[in-house]
Image (cartoon, rainbow, N blue to C red; front, side, top):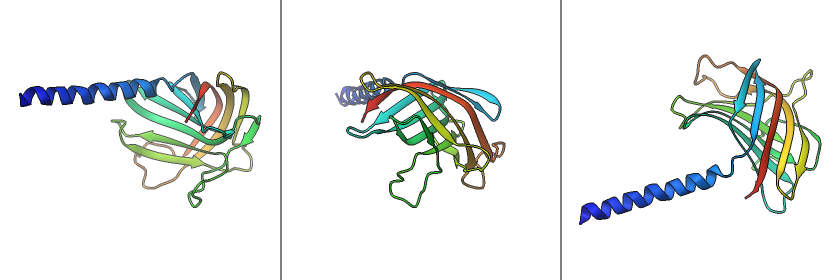
Length: 180
């Protein structure tokens, strides 16, 4: 009898996790393609989130290989009704940074643990920016372009082959906004 109870509990946990994974999977939509250090990269999971009664968005772009997260790129506090916006480095000293900020990160080989983390770098001769080309609040569709330079934020590096600076150019995205 104990064996059957254990099987029931284990299968309940497994199937409830699969439902949650399927629900979260529905929040990914669209595509994002960038030129990262002169190499074309396709982020195959894209999402945008907005809090109710808030005109700012969070954009998340992830590149997965099978079930392993390899790298992610995020933009916080994107104003959805503004065309071109400057991108700043996230200010860790503020509890909630009001500026539009961005970060880029890689994962270890198993995808469960973060590896190298990069923050946006302000340069005089390069504009870190994101441009919203299209946004429709009725169906949540949003698209745009971006470019940004990132610098590694911690030493020693997790991956010794990882560069100190990441240049993202010609970023193009299209996704849907989901309410949180």
